[in-house]
Image (cartoon, rainbow over all chains, first blue to last red; front, top):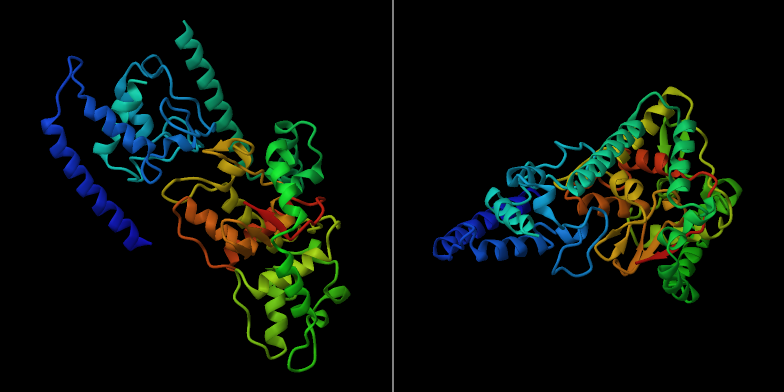
Length: 125
Length: 284
C-alpha cells in the first residue's frame, strides 16, 4: 500500500514535470490564461484516478455525473476570488468539517500544480 | 443578488451538514437513542419506505434498479453456493460431529442473533467466527474468512433464517458499550486518503448518485449478507465488503474478523434491528 502511494507520487511528480515543460510553450490568451491550462485541468478533473470530480459534480462536457455535490456552474459568481476556489479544492473540510469532498491538497491526492490547473478549469465553468 | 442567495443557501446547507455530523457524533446518547435517530433519519430521507424494505438496499429505494435486480433474483447467482453451503453444513467432521452441534437450534434459523456479545469470552462474536471455532474445536482446520466455503455455509445459515427479524440485544454492560462505541466510531470517523466516513456515503448521501451508481442506505445493509456481488463474481462475507469499502477510500483495510470489523458489524447490525434477514443477497 505504502509502496503503491510512493509509485503514485513519483508518477505525479513526473507528470507535473512534463506538464511544466508543456506550459512554457503554451500560448497565453488576453486573460492571461493559456487554453492548454484549462484543457489540462479538465483532464485531471475528469480522470478517475486524479480529481474524479464527476463522481459527485455535474460538469459541462462530462458524462454520467453524480449528484452528491452541486453542479459546477457559474463558478466565477460563486467564487469571485479564485484563491478561495483553490482553497476549497485544496481542503474543503476547512470550510465544512464533515464535507465528503476529499481534501485534494492536504492529503496530497493530486499535486499543488495539478490543483492550480484544476482551479483554472473549474473557474471558467 | 442571485449570487448572495446561492451563497446563503450553501452556507445554510453547510451549517446543517456540520450540525448533523456533530449531532450523530455526540457521545451522550444511548444505543437505543442511536437506533431511534438512525431509523428516523432514513424515514425522513425516504418518506413512505417501510423499515423492512431497507433490507433490499438500493432496490428498496429506487424502482428502476429494482426491476433489474428482481429479474436477476429469478435465477439467483448465489444458488450454487447455497447448495454447497447446505451440503457442507450437513457433512460430519472427521470426529462424526456436525456444525449443528455448535449452535442453538442446530444452527437453523438463528442468523438474526449474530453478531452477539459473549459474556463467557468477553468479546463480540460473529457467525463466521463461531463457524470456524466449531471447526477447530472439532479438530478441523479453520476456513479463510472472506469467501469460499465459509461464505457458502454462512449463506445457507442465513437462508434458513429468512424472514426472522434481526435481533441484536441492546448493549448495556460497560464492555458491550465499549465494543458498540468502537463500531460506531468506525462508522462515523473519516478515514483514508479520500477522507470519507462510512456515514458520508451510506447515511448523508444515501440515495444519491456517485457517478452512475446509487449509494445504499446503511440501514438494512447487514440483512442480506453474505452476498453474491457481480463485481466479485463470487460470494463474500460482510468483512470482505468492509475491506473493499476501506480500500475504496484509500485506507488500509483491517483484517477480516479483526476486533475493529467485529465492532463495526455489531454496531451496523444493531442499527438494523427489526429488519428481516433476507440473505444471501445479490448485488452489483
